[in-house]
Image 1 (cartoon, rainbow, N blue to C red):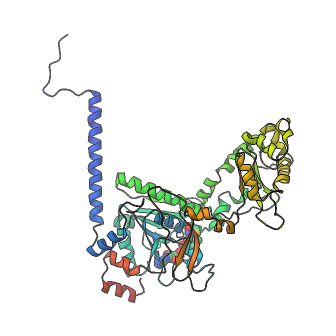
Image 2 (cartoon, rainbow, N blue to C red):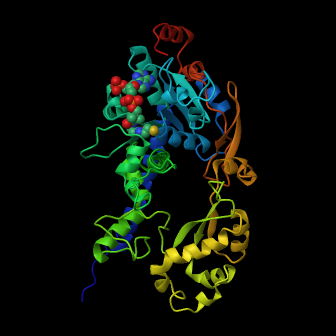
Image 3 (cartoon, rainbow, N blue to C red):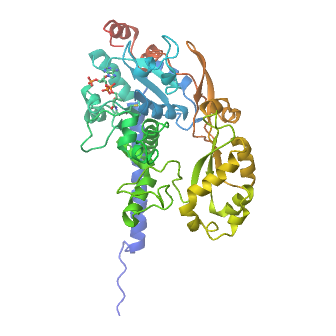
Length: 475
Ligand code: COA
C-alpha cells in the first residue's frame, strides 16, 4: 500500500481538533469577559467626587456582596426582607422612597408617636434612603441615573406600577444592559397575575391555610411570614444567582418570585400527601386515621409531624396558666425503646401493638396521651433535658418573650439590639445566614431621605441641580 504523501500542513486528528476548538472557545470566553469588564468599568466610570465617597464606604471584599449596588424600590415586607438580607451580606442598598411619604410601613403599627415603626425599622437595616418622585421629570432623571449606577433593581410594586414609572424592561436595558431586575409579585403568569397580594392572601392561595389547623376548625394562617419574608428569601437567592451568571455572560436578566409559588414550595409535603391520598384513600400518620374520614383533599392535620416520624404537641407542667407550657414530642422509631423507658411504659417495647412503627400508627393519639401524662409532670425545659440525654427529638414551645431574652441568640447575632436616633434601643432579628468570612453588623434603618444629598453627590448632581430638583418637589 502506497504511503500517503506527507503534506506541508500535517492533518489534525479528531482529538487534536477538539482540543484546539476547546482552546479557542476558552480564549473567546476570556476575551469576552475582559471586554465585559472593560465595558463595565466605562459604564460605571465614577465621577471624582463619587469615587471618593464610594471608596471610603465600600469594603475590600470583607463582606460577600461588598461590590454590589442595589437600587431598592421595595416597600412593605417581601421586597425589604430581600434587600435587607443583601445589605447584611455587604451590598450597598439605596432605598428609594416618595418625598414626604416614604415606605407606608414607616407609619404603620406605631408604638411611639411620630417615630418610624418597628415594622419599618426591622425590615430596613443597613440601607441608605433617598427620596425622589419617580413621576416628576427631575425625579425621573435621578432615578435613571440610579439605574445606570446600580447592579440590581429590586421592586415589589403592584403589577404594572414600574412600567407606569417609565421603567419598562426595555428602558432599563437601554440604560444599563447589565442590570438585573428582581421582582416579587403575588402570582405568576395566569388568571391572578394582576392581583395585589399581602401575606395571608399568599398563605391561602399557596396551600398553607387549607392544610393548617385542626380538622374540625376553619383554615388557619400561620404567624411565620412565609409569603412575604419567605418570598424575599427566594428573591435574594435569585439575585445572587443572576449576579453570578452575569460574571460569565456579562448580561443582566429578570428575576421573578411569586408569593403563591413561594408558599406552595414550602408546602411541598402536602402536595406529596395529596398524591398519596389520591392513590390510597388515607394517610395513616394523620390524626384522622383510623377513626376519622378522609375526603378528596389533604385534610388539616393539627400538630402532626409532616414527616415519617410521628409527633405532637404535649402539655407540660404549668400548662393551666402558661399558654406556652408545651413541648413538641417526636416518637422517632430508633429511640422508641428509650421513650418507653423514660415514660415508664417498658411493656410497650415488646408488645405487638406498640413495638413496631406500623403497629403504632392507628394508636398514635392514645400513645401521645400516655406520653403527655409524663410530660405534664415536668416543665418543658426539664422534659427537654431528660429527653435529650436519650437523643429523643423534642422542642420546647418558646414564647416571643423567651426568645427575646435568650442569651445564646444574642451571642450568635440572631437577635440584636440596635440603637435608633428617634426611637432609642430596640430588638431585631439579625442575619440568619452566617458566613465564616463575611460578618454582619446590623446597623439601624435610615430616616426618610437621610442620604438623599450624599447619594445625589455620588451620582454627580451638583448643588444647583439638587436645589432645582428640591424646589420642584422631585427629591
Ligand atoms: N415616586 C412616585 N410614585 C411612586 C413612588 C415614587 N418614589 N413609589 C411608589 N409610587 C407609586 C407607584 O408608582 C404606584 O402608583 P400607580 O399604581 O398609580 O402607578 C403607587 O405608588 C402604589 O404602588 P402599589 O404597589 O400599587 O402600592 P399599594 O400600596 O396600592 O399596594 C401591595 C401594596 C403590596 C398590595 C402591592 O404593591 C403588591 O401587590 N405588590 C406585589 C406583591 C407584594 O410584594 N406583596 C407583599 C407586600 S409585603
